[in-house]
Image (cartoon, rainbow, N blue to C red; front, side, top):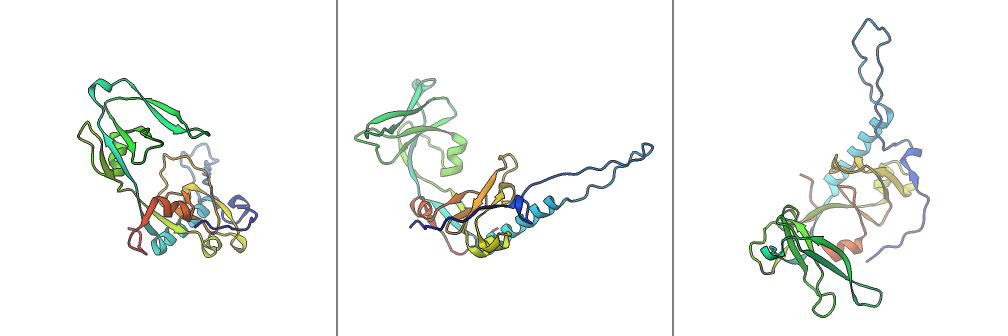
Length: 230
């Protein structure tokens, strides 16, 4: 069930005492005869990023919930004769007719994936995944040239965004705020840093992905709740 919230002003952390940015300040010794450099001091922004990270880490540890992706897909290995050929992924156009969405070259390190439900008639949405990405999501590698069904093993750890969390993150009166993706416990260093908008009614993962409750109910199933972070 989607929640409708009143529109409230967004307060970026850049305008609040909590700043979700990382700034380094280096100060060289003014004496040219000395090669030593003054120790790097933690800036206010660094201290704030650490504070936001700790607040989120504690929140996920205390109230984080694990949801498992409720997805089943068909998959098979490509045939030798299909190597180098193009796989067309179909979608439905505005008239409900099959239309090409994308095309990809079939190579050895790929798996051909087919969604369980046809788009229309006997037309299925098929696409390619690398074998490593498929294994990460489904846990088993296809080993035949014919389609077999697989269940996803992908899980996410999410947290409902409540007014108390927003207040702890520095939001005035629990109003929507933006914080840096780098502040989330499972943010990967190789992922781009960006501002994440948090508002009551949504759910947030420990990687900084925002979900609606409707999206969670549609694509995921809750596991043992509540659960503590490992």
